[in-house]
Length: 255
Image 1 (spheres, rainbow, N blue to C red):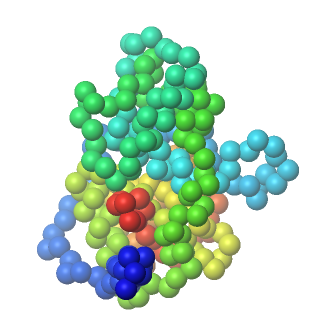
Image 2: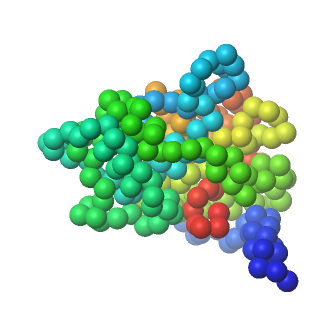
């Protein structure tokens, strides 16, 4: 069997596996302790091309770039507001240095992180140096052709979404952001990514709080319906409330 065939078989098996044995207990609520929605997210948005068909120079279809980039800043950048500001080209170079780290790599210690001088946080930096940040984040091309995108077209077996929930909650309880691929395909409404940063138990299941690259103004949410064992887009930008499928993204070199 070829190496490619082995890899594909491994991924298909992982994508279709049934839920593992659930942990005996987990916190009723948890959030990533070092993350602030108001400070640690981009100030600008990813636009939806269908809403602005005639607009030129639209920053659209960059949701995967932004979600991954926000995680990379959280793990590999350090802001020093008292340091002198630098030219836009230097900021672009530093953004590229941040995003050169694999999103699934462990966070760097403070002394080894890329320094962003003159700003207190990502929100302030991306508001003042929007063009430089976008240039540093780079192209969206490889996110379009990422080989795991096929998952949006596939049904999921019983137990799969409950298994995804268990993984997401375990990561959040451990203090790690989780990037999610969310879709309601074959509806041509939602093939998107968000970043989970907190969860809480609710009467009908678990509500996961997310940062949505399409909506920098405030938090979104997806609900896990415990009775039906499925996710619901309870507060996802420009998406009707309804069932969706959720997959983790960029958590290993393979997935």
